[in-house]
Image 1 (spheres, rainbow, N blue to C red):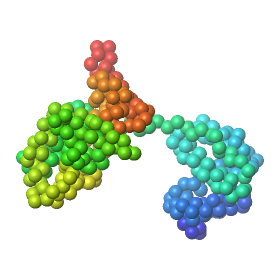
Image 2 (tube, one colour):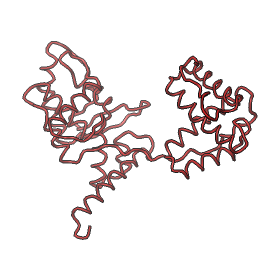
Image 3 (cartoon, helix red, strand yellow):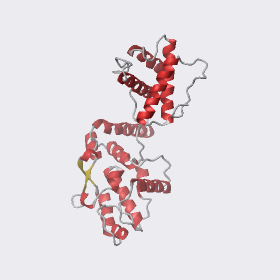
Image 4 (cartoon, rainbow, N blue to C red):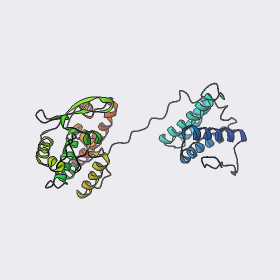
Length: 313
């Protein structure tokens, strides 16, 4: 047994040639020693390499003899057999890692995996709530107590601004300008942006600042906007837990993520005709392509509305 606990497949009916087996095991041992990868990850690497080595054997070649054409033919054959793009991308990642190590150790003069393009992967569409579900979620906290008022205000601000959860829980008093109705956000890579609050979120913020926050702080002081009874900032995990509780109370059965309100903010803006570049600025995305995923969600929603309400839908 190897140090990382992956048993070689020596008992198989058609074992690999000894030199191929040793090459794969040496590669895995090196990964285990240099990167500390888990047994599960190493087992996946081994499975990919063994499958490729067997294919090469059937075609009269081997791992160190196969060129770029052989690798391309193998990947093409797998695609034709119906293997998913994500699986193919993982396989190519394994082979790149393998061949780069062989190149580094002087076993190869050229990397056959170089310049091979990875398959294009569809980005998963973000989960969103429709506008009615958002209203039900926002109405779930009991605003008769300071905790509920704080949570309602946080939900309102999150939906009104599209802030990341880390940006929301880290908001400081000095970042909020109620007179101008904006919040100043320091996002990823220290990029600053101004995001409007909107009348509804601003009204809830004013209520929270006039009563709920001071009741939570008691004798404490804190620079953060949203505080716990201990006078500390809320953690992302705590806010995410409260979102799940309120979603359950509101009867929302959809699978949620910590950024569900952020995704809903962007999608609803686009549904109501907002310009994509404006949404990009509000979300703090450095690249427009990151924002474009929301156009798919918005388009899907518009198609559903058309099919439901148009007489010839």
